[in-house]
Image 1 (spheres, helix red, strand yellow):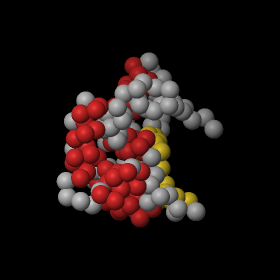
Image 2 (cartoon, helix red, strand yellow):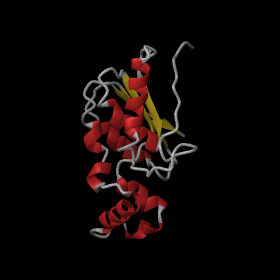
Image 3 (cartoon, one colour):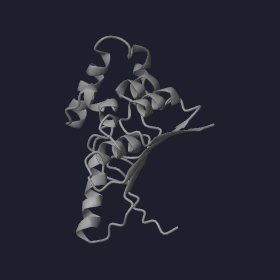
Image 4 (spheres, one colour):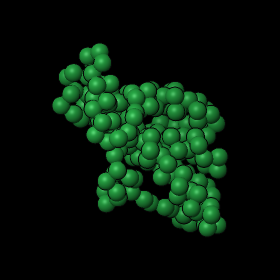
Length: 170
């Protein structure tokens, strides 16, 4: 259809490097690096839309607020915060509501990965509040047990842009 598409594997995913996964904090830089590469080689075509799925959507949301040439963002199944993942995809699910538990998990992960993340670093609400008038499309599966549709709706509602849309997939 005439669109330029650049597909890459984020660090720590697929066949890419074994770097630690950071919930989109470091991975968002990949979007920016590839955009800089295309600009430097005079190959960037508009519109420039960042798209991501799951953690990739968190990366896309983080990157798009840093890229002045971005035209829109598509976030398919973004997680709202660290608790969304830990409470549903790890053995710590039952303990995630205990005071200090998530911070302890993150500290242990930081020691293993060499990162220094806080639970606040993984909160997507402050990120979407910076979207302003950038068009944002959120996609959520009604039966998604990780990126629950009601939490994606919270991100949608907290998005500063009035040019936003939320699509539910049965």
